[in-house]
Length: 234
Image (tube, rainbow, N blue to C red; front, side, top):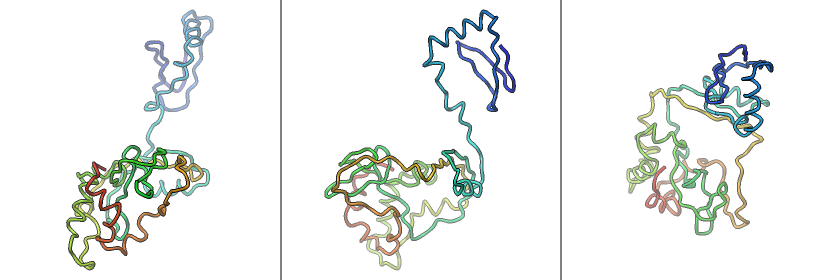
């Protein structure tokens, strides 16, 4: 057995190539061990076709500028980027959390009396608050439900001119440098959605267009108000 551009190793009937660069492997059919190995592969095709993703997929570091440039390319494919960024501001006037499915964290859809999840195909779900996906708790040290509850408590019975736009824990993230792993999907590949029937009260895709003009009490009315009391985590 011979190989180029890589260091080959055979352990427990597994051929391993240590290099991430493209490699060629040459097998000498006159060697008995090679014939034995190929015979074993023929009898174990499921193992032969198995790919260990954490070995094959290597994170590609990029700046935020490079990430945005890649996203604008018409030929952009599914890719993972590892970005290091310093938080220099927290935008006010936009929704900083959303109510999602407790299982998949997809934004929940309002039904007549329940919250539904299109992705899971469920007409009644246990909802949770979601902040920056799974990164919110790591950034702030608090679960999304705690931040939402403290947000409404801080703004309870205050005038509209004195409303705190975002929790203090988010403001405190300014100046911190963190590493982010970002997955980029092509525009023509939206998330699959299950059919929940026709009685679905669709919510706008943009979660924060009208949030800035609302008072805390107005936002608290309806589903959000009850979810603050019942949400488990985010």
